[in-house]
Image 1 (cartoon, rainbow, N blue to C red):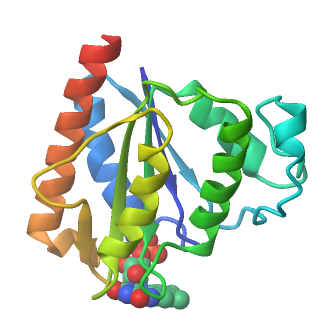
Image 2 (cartoon, rainbow, N blue to C red):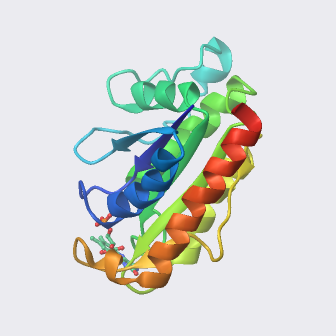
Length: 191
Ligand SMILES: Cc1cc2nc3c(=O)[nH]c(=O)nc-3n(C[C@H](O)[C@H](O)[C@H](O)COP(=O)(O)O)c2cc1C
């Protein structure tokens, strides 16, 4: 059983990565393998609306010179997917949005690839816009035949500089509970 966590921040190993690792710790404690995929420093173009994926139906995007197909293949191979993003201008980052846009179209061409996977979203914010970013991530997961995992609050934590989210005790507790809930559901489905 494997969960991939995708860090949509252009800042590697920042607050979003810390949140994903907090969820991972709970999954690992319960015997579930995890892998952090960081989009930082990896080229990822937006969808060009060529619609070629609808014709070729090979679970790949025709833009083949960036990180998308590699990342998408890792998402297909996992039983669980966590999307993570910091809030940028009251929304999700351009990097994770590019991934979502292209994955949505490739999934429209290849229905069912994410069926019955377990999904969750986590967001790091300095002050405002976390719910909007969270909605962007969960709307994607929710429309792909997946089971979404919740916690005791929406999965967000607050901080600006790297490490500051760990001072948000409620946010971190929420991430730990999310990991526990995700492990529980994964074991029911795949254990
Ligand atoms: C370009 C840019 C835009 C941002 N916009 C917002 C925003 O609208 N609302 C907010 O609360 N934080 C905003 N932030 C702060 C980040 O969300 C915050 O520092 C977050 O913890 C960064 O997570 P990371 O370390 O994973 O990149 C912005 C940061 C940058 C660099």
